[in-house]
Structure formats: structure tokens, C-alpha cells
Length: 121
Image (tube, rainbow, N blue to C red; front, top):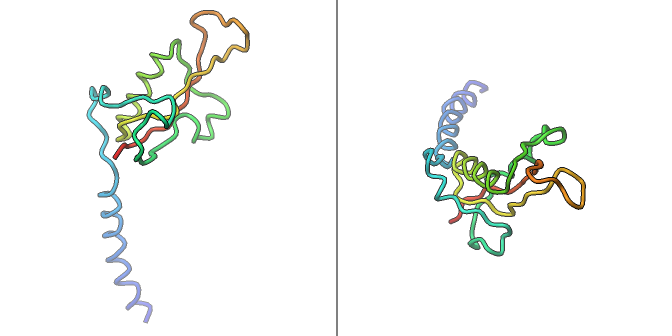
């Protein structure tokens, strides 16, 4: 009886793993980051999208360290590269925050940034 159940199960499991691989989004080729749009909020983004990943906050490592940037433009370029490599074509809720707690932070001080990589439909 157990063999009758186990045999179809052994046939179905590899088929299911192949189907799940077909459902994943292929990453964009390097150099196609110009197709990734950056949005400060969801109000400026297209209405329909699928969330792929929140950058720098989903990992346990973010409790200890996250990447820092010297400018918001540098951060936006890195987020575009990350989004393209994950198969996304947009970043929503993108924002950068000064890591130096001061009313007048020095120029070039470290910025922490976050955002959500999405695939617009």
C-alpha cells in the first residue's frame, strides 16, 4: 500500500519543482537599469504591481548593518541595479535618511536608504 502512494509522489515532486521554476521572473540583463523607475511613494507609481523584495530590511543582518551611500543619486543607481537583478522594473517607497543625527549633517555623510522592488504589470 505504501509503495502505491510513494511512487506517484516521487513522480509528482520533480514536476512541481519544475513548474515553480517557470513561475519566477527572469532578471533583466545588466545595463538595463534605465528601465527601472524609482518612486518616492506609491502615489506616483502605476497602480498594479507585484512586490518582489524590500531591500536591506528583510534580512536579519539589517539589525546590525546596511549599505550606506554618499548621495541619493548613488543610492538610486544601486537600487536600480538591485531591482534589475531581481527581475523588477521599479522601486517604490524609496527614501534616504542621514545616519548622522545632527540638525546640519556634514556634506558627504553616510545615508541609509530603503525601498521596495516591484514588478509593474
